Image 1 (cartoon, rainbow, N blue to C red):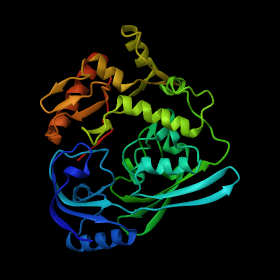
Image 2 (cartoon, one colour):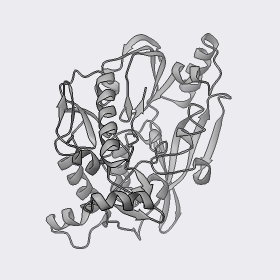
Image 3 (cartoon, rainbow, N blue to C red):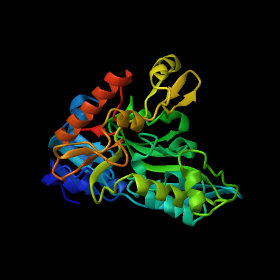
Length: 349
């Protein structure tokens, strides 16, 4: 374990933005993590939870949900702690715990190979297991909170382990305690899910899963079939970060009051929407496309030609500021046309 100086983060973020960390270290165990933090805190004693603390230390998983807009003047810690364990609860349920450094898609495939159900709709989402509860990742009618049981975290002030159950995590749409009052105070060490072993709840209602299964000639899908359908859909619509830099969906789907939606619908009756009580969720991709951004390029940055929700590092040479400015222009145009303000899903550093 070596702390390196002036370290390039280009290969550690899926946008492929070329920025430098003042210090960088990769940790392969929880003990190494504590050791690094103790050492660094003696050199740079800073109160956890302050704005200075957020600048001084950054924990990276797969780098799939972050946009660096400048060099990082502090310590970047790459969490590479791996391992998966299982505990059978009964004939139909099992607890599966994965360490933070496990690749998310590989973890999902591990579960599917064991015929454990519950995560299949979340196939091919980039990133690592440790970051999944932070933004309550979700896709095709499923969210982390649906199978989440608990996570073990390290309290960065006390350097003691704590356990957060479902309630304590305060999950919301692409949100959790770790993005709110717990931001910068904890690092997730492992995550435990409760999955099914026999009576799987197959979810095919959302998005294009049913159509994809029909194309595959499947009438009674298994969880493995659903996963394969999701993979086909994502591969057909979303660019591979290994080929062209991106962070997947850049914006959250906005949720607006029903009364506001009804006013906008008078002007745009074809607007797709998903009602939920007094609120209505509107697809951000549709809003962005209606503003003419789909496939549009400015300099090194573009909105993907197949999915307007995805911003790409078109030339591979874009700076984080270029990407951020591009996203700001999208936000402004959607607000001007629809009166709806988009929120970035990607963490801006």
